[in-house]
Image (cartoon, rainbow, N blue to C red):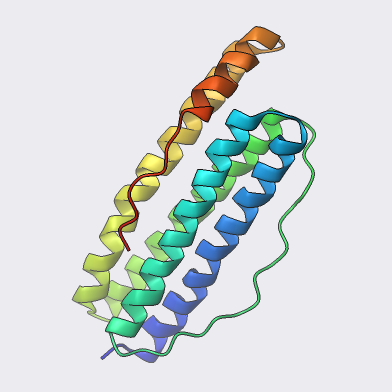
Length: 168
Ligand code: OFO
């Protein structure tokens, strides 16, 4: 059993994870169009991971006997002024998602929903990693400045990212 309140916020967060996937896919397209294939690769993988996050919510709701309610996914931004702006938006977005996960934990605690609280702890940990990864890339971009060979190296580095095995 899952309370109506818990179910409502889990369904709403399911949409946020799919929106994250959509946003990062848009960023991947932005970099593909600029022939920065490594940066595009990083965002393609990021987008796939967000899809998996959405599916974790999807599966959990069903396991708890709840009704999955899919809703409209907002259109993401499609243009950025610079690489810096893309990553600043990424960090801002991840910080927002961390805040939303914390609010879900608050609801689970108020509802005394221990199973959902345990399920959400994976996301609490994941968000720490997500924010740290983006912050690290932002620091590298700051170091690079206008240096084209630095950008080339970063593109190569991010191009080496491979998708983690899918566990849903
Ligand atoms: Fe789903 O972790 Fe990013 O948003």
